[in-house]
Image (cartoon, rainbow, N blue to C red):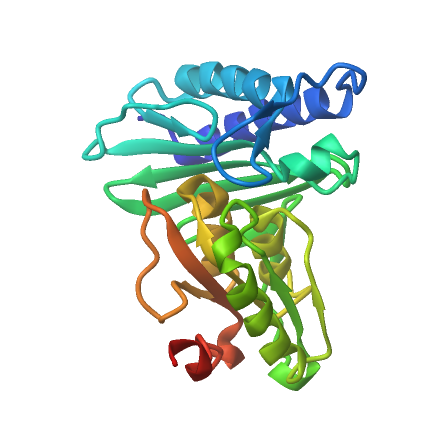
Length: 262
């Protein structure tokens, strides 16, 4: 394997290229298609960017497996390296030109999150991390905030593909709304995780996410000094769906409210 910093630089270059594809998208022809579940869509650009990034990542690290959102990828889960990719995290935002979407590339090594890149092309913000080396935004170190819950901002995802979880999602949001400054919902879990990492907010949760939604962002958050688990406080998996709770170090009490178990 080549030097990991060289790998990171090459991934950044590939992701930045894909960000340009997003920015230059022909919005008159997004070729939107329905996927399984409520409000679950893909555009021609989800597919196109995944094809581009898969080809580029294969050239960067040929020995790595590839798991992406837009294909039924068959992978060797015991491989040393596995890329986990969301070509457009925040597809509905992209469809609506809401300009809050990201490209997320995580790299799993021997069953652990090892490298993460999340890029918001609209703001030209490139979040990166290598395990054990801290987290960065456009090359500068970032850290979670040290604000208590009463001075915190809550971010959450509503799991829109699973309408049966809607009431529970908003009940939890309301529970924490009464304890913090305010709440936000941006529509990109990868960017929400990076917002916690950069100290812009203090808590993020979602009741179910796919691995490509959190693979890169979870590592970036951990390397920025935060903590990420499932909602019950257990270990977040690398390659399976999971609930997710992301906090700065002061908010380890922010687990699933007891009333939701009753």
